[in-house]
Image 1: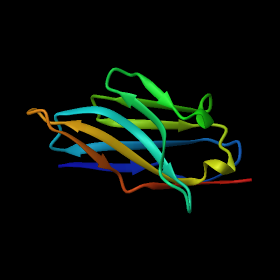
Image 2: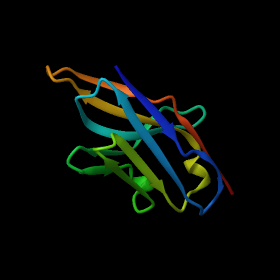
Image 3: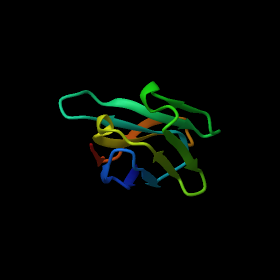
Image 4: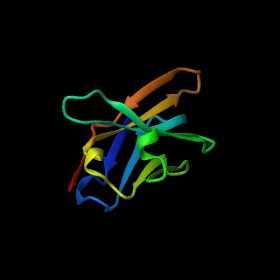
Length: 120
């Protein structure tokens, strides 16, 4: 089992910044991809950014140039630096990891989510 602990959410004004962190723990072998999703009230959960173990990244168009995803493989942690926040970024942000066991089983794990609220 893999547990995820998220932190860094909060309430900010438009134009300000926040940094989210998500640390994985438990029976870890290899964290393949780590990423962030978000879900606004009444909407589906959507991908924000994802990073592979080698550092390749992918972002949803609406956050390109404002958000930066990074990871520390030694600490099993993924970060999301969010700059120039907009009210439309308001959502619950969820960390997701894809874990590979030493016998080749891939499993997805989700964090409990952290609220980000951006006021205008």
